[in-house]
Image (cartoon, rainbow, N blue to C red):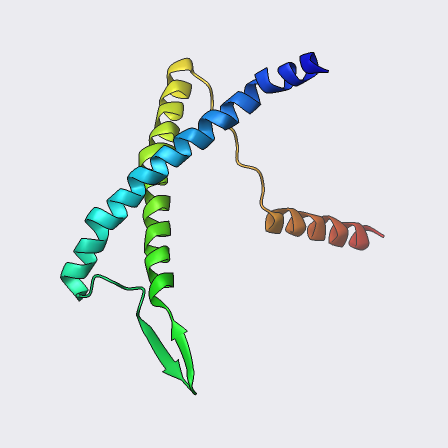
Length: 131
């Protein structure tokens, strides 16, 4: 029983996942600091007000608090941009360079659903006309 558990823990994907979670938490802390210490003060310098959590409006005696949502959206977009520009884009660039260096040809793109449906439609029309 314990040997099976040990095999499970030592499988590559479990260890990779654990490393990814730890790295993601550390990266999240860096981006959170970037948002709270750099981006939000820039937005404050442009639009004023540092605390956006209290922003709200009232409609028919109902209060809609949108400030916290606005802060979270800015944080999400910042995290997504940081992940893309600091991780995804450089890795894609390195992979492209590696493939070019090794002479690996680029794969042809798969047809889209619309293209496949158009081909099926044309085949069915040709089959109907042949009958």
